[in-house]
Image (cartoon, rainbow, N blue to C red; front, side, top):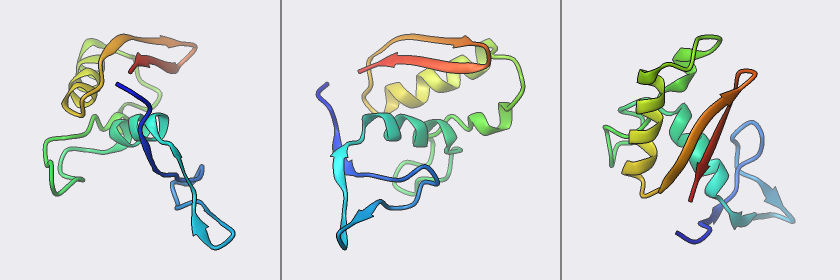
Length: 95
């Protein structure tokens, strides 16, 4: 899968606007982040999409969490190579 191009968001997930216009660029990373934060039902056009990892903050990266991440990314067309955690930071290798 090639890099996805879309309107970009800032760190607070608000639209990035420069010189009075939307900023467009590689959105693959932000798309993964949004999919992981979203809970099922957040996307009207695809109500089952979302991993809802915010419910797992400060918790272990167990098999269920890893499965929800995998299912959400596969449903959106990503090919997953690896999902791991290092010092509480989730690392996802997907394309």
